[in-house]
Image 1 (cartoon, rainbow, N blue to C red):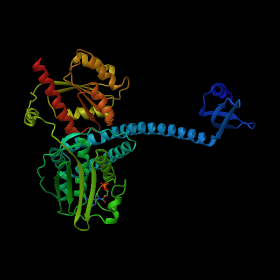
Image 2: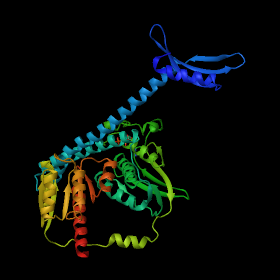
Image 3: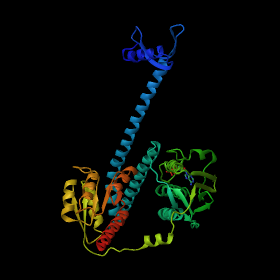
Image 4: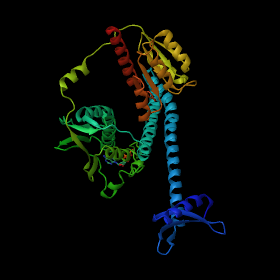
Length: 455
Ligand code: ADP
């Protein structure tokens, strides 16, 4: 018996002699050639015969499989962790330079340019957005596949989401001369993640526009049933051959569209299908060659969560205006190009003074000294984690009430939730959407003003 197993073997043998039967006792033996075998024993003691009767099975093979399985699982877990880490890092590394490219191109676009220059800037922006879309879709896809997609399913009113999405695809439709037929009235609530639903609709609508014919149209319909709501998006494009329908949702499969002028990654529908299924919905497609295609998504219908919808609407619409005055904004950021970008953006807000700190400690000191109206905070600082800066400011009575907007390249849901939980007022991702940034800033300033009035 292998030295490590001798003690338990002796103990169990004594128990059996004492009258206890053993059914699944395992131990190991060393052979003369040094190899080790695993045995599984059933045994009992016969008092009459004064003999122990035992049956042993050689389970060496099984034990080896179990050990290999265990090892494989450990390896897979390790690889999975490395993959998550890689994704988060890639998201950051790729998005940070995109911030400078798209940000400065957006600013250039606002300047007076010659038509050649303006054409060039348009190319930069188009290329940049395409790359960003690809980064986002690859991240989404890998996140879903790693089972790391966080969704918050809640009752969402369909119509406003449809309206917002339609507004987003309007320029694309206008560019391609595609008519968007007006939206049907639909006040049903469905159980979805609002952001992901928007992504799904955006993908389907932009496909319906991209793969349409000249002067074609896109029609949206809603079918409300007791338990479900179905959203149907129909186009008047060339349609999809029946034998290719199954490939639609395969990643990187573009069904020949790579030869056309329609830009794409071939990932949109793969991500869309996974999102829909993660929200417990279904997606189907019907297509007629030469007539067009209809994509339908269906979700569970739920009751409206608003007891008093009118009151909520009135509150949301109350317009607290920012009075023209002097505001100070502190930006804690070590990356100069990001700082320059914000500086340039703020030139569109006269009356706003920008202070900056290129590390966390200096940032905290400046916040205490100057009591800014808003703090913008990067998370990747040279001396301390942005999260710790946030905690430190929140714990300081002098600074606790100052709105803090986190601006980070880490767009992972978990990270956003963590920062919001420890006191961030808002979380914006890089590459910065200039309009969204200004909107968030105005909202922060308004809130600060209201708080000051109340105190
Ligand atoms: P992408 O649009 O980026 O190429 P998608 O995954 O969204 O990727 O779509 C995959 C392919 O399916 C497209 O390249 C196109 O050939 C085809 N397709 C998608 N939607 C439609 C549509 N509404 N009409 C015709 N073909 C479509």
